[in-house]
Length: 313
Image (cartoon, rainbow, N blue to C red):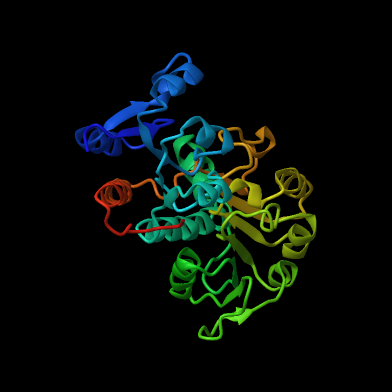
């Protein structure tokens, strides 16, 4: 398989790059001064593309690669891949589910604790010497808060399990009610937001879920409510979120994703009730390795004419 051309548009995991270079002809698009010329020169050799949460394969890239057979995404989310065109052209698509579930769910709970207990600000209080002038202010308890989850898939269920360990009642919204679960179901996001203290966004990004967190939902969550977004940035109407936080209509937010990454609204930087992370939901050594192995496993299965490990298309 050393002659199989595999295109990686942007840097991802050093381990993934290393393992791909051992097995395939890895082509690093970001190293090319003229990307269009690079693609044209190698279009006949590229049979696979490696995507991730921020870079997939749109119509333009797919049409530029006539020999493309598979897009293997180094992420669960595949909203950056034109799935309709892939189906039309018979291009296979894979992702990396399950292996990152624990890390992302862990981070959701970490963000909730960090916002409610003001962990980041309290850390700064110690480092700046503020503690010498007096005790830090009182914060808010997490245990027992009602946690609402938008999207009760693998990660949503893992968040619920962790929150239950803190004696948190669980409620959820999804496209359909899940009768096998004991959690309280609400048929709309507004109703869910009205009946929870912490709202966690973890659903897939689709046209239907884009800006699923809008002004109405934010106002329903209210000045004591906390929003946690570990899904995708465009799930949240960012301008409405910023306005609500500045005006005190929302109690706080823990964000790992943003509408226009890596750009983050500067108005959020000085808010003590907001915790900002640079899209690191699955970024642990262990999960990075497991995800990379799954990408490689899917590529090897495809080119050896074996069943894909985690097919999407």
